[in-house]
Image (cartoon, rainbow, N blue to C red; front, side, top):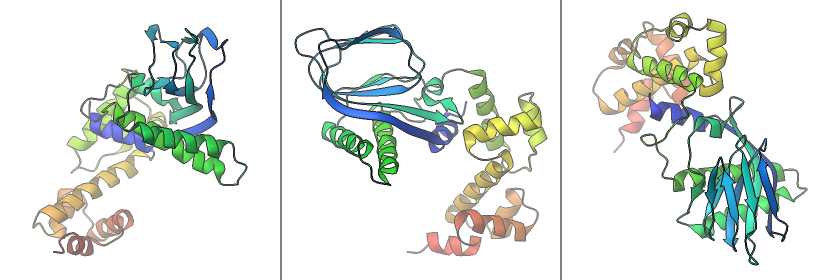
Amino acid sequence: MDNRTLLSNVLANLEVDLITADHNLCAPDWRDLNYTPDYSKFYWICEGEGWLRIGGKEYYPRPGELFLMPEGVEQSYSFISERPFRKYWCHFTAQVGGINLFKLLDLNPRCAPQQPELLTKVFSEIVNHSGSDAVYAKLLAKSKLMELIACYLMNLKLDADSVSFQQTPTVNKLAEVLDYIDEHIAQNMTVEELAGIVYMHPNSFIRLFKQYAGMPPIQYITHKKIEKAKQSLALTALSVTEISEQLGFNDMFYFSKQFKKHAGATPTDYRRQVRLP
C-alpha cells in the first residue's frame, strides 16, 4: 500500500463542519453510558478528573491531554470525584468523500500535545468564533477546527510511514490503483485500464477515485506527471523534449500547456526559476 500518497490525498481532501464548541466545568451529573454519536468530539482537559470509555477501552484523562471520541464508535463518560473536568470541547464532523475520516485511519484517541498553550489558544478561538454572529465567523471556526485536527495528528507523530489505515475494501482498492499509477507514470493509462485492476465498472471507479483523490483519475495522472516533470527540470540536465517523452507526452505543445496550467509557468521558465542562484 502506498501510504504516503494515500495519506496525502486523504488529508488534502478533508472536509470538516463544526457543530458546537464550549469551555466549561462539568456538572456533577455529567454522565452518559453506551451511546454511539453521529458526530465526533474533541475533549481538551484543563483540570479535574473523569472517566471515558471509547470503543470498549477505558481512559482516565489527565489535564494536558487531548482526547478524540470518534463518530460511530460506542462510548461512555462520567465524573468520578468531587473534582470534575474543566475542559474545552467541540462536536464536529470530518469526512473524505462523504466517509468519516476516523473510519479510514486507525488512530489513538489520546495524545499529549507538546505545546499545550497552542491547543488552548486554538480551542479558545473556536469557541469565540462559534459564538459569534459575524458573517465570517463560521468560516474562521472551520479553519481553526482544521488546525485543531492537524495539531492532533501531528502530536500523534502521524506520518506516511507509520500511519495505519483501516483495512476496508475501498481503501485497499484505491491504494492498489495509486501504486499502479506511480509504477506506470511514464505510460498513458486509461480509465478502463485502471478500473480493470480493481474489477470495477469505469463509471463506478471514477466516482470512487474522485471521492478520495479529489479529482478524476485522468486529471490525477496528469498532475502526477507534472510533478515528476518538475523534479526532472530541477534536478537533471534533460531537455524539455526528453522529459516530455519520458512521461508519455507525445505532443510538446500539450505538455507545455498542461505544465503551465499546473505549475503556473512554462517548463523552460520553471527550470530557470528553480535554478536561480
